[in-house]
Length: 235
Ligand SMILES: C[S@@+](CC[C@H](N)C(=O)[O-])C[C@H]1O[C@@H](n2cnc3c(N)ncnc32)[C@H](O)[C@@H]1O
Image (cartoon, rainbow, N blue to C red):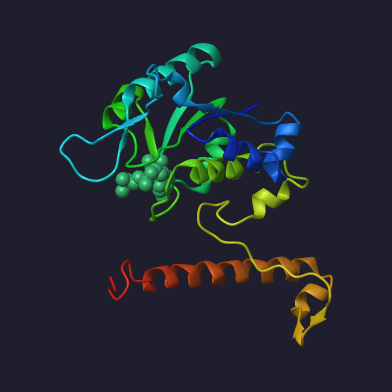
């Protein structure tokens, strides 16, 4: 069973989300385990200080090395070594293939930064893998950590009602996005379900879905290339 250990200053905020939906089901079925650990508990001063001003000046605060590293050393001594990921907008993009890999990893550490992030020496000391969930900046790593836990939980055998869902989802092959889906009513506000889906010819349906997925994958690539990286500027 994969174990995620999430290092955060806001464990309570995470617990509520972890209790519902696919992740909640996986936890209750014993197919996944998630520990949220508050590294503030590893501070030694009266004010429980986790951050300090940046050397060299500038805005914001930086997370101090001592409590974070001592916390990781304690939990690895207790639960065993983890694959160590740190949430970081500058990290490599987290993709579906990473979620597949984590579903087979016994223990993964997800370190959630706040403020300007972690002191850079923590990365070297703990040999961290920085990962990003997109080219934008959140206020903290918690939503990114939940994203990773949920993307992984769906791929743990037994978590989804029908295992085919994950295999047929977007990015299962690293690139192709899913085809469109339709349900009843057959006509809604004048919009009809494509005829091919109503005929019961499974070969034709499979061919239509494959063609549709290819078309949507291309359209997504085209839209991405056409999106300026900065407003008003085309690449
Ligand atoms: C305000 S951000 C720090 C931003 C950092 N100074 C920078 O510009 O790259 C605080 C924390 O949020 C998390 N975070 C923000 N955006 C993220 C993203 N796109 N992916 C993963 N983590 C993110 C990281 O853990 C980060 O340490």
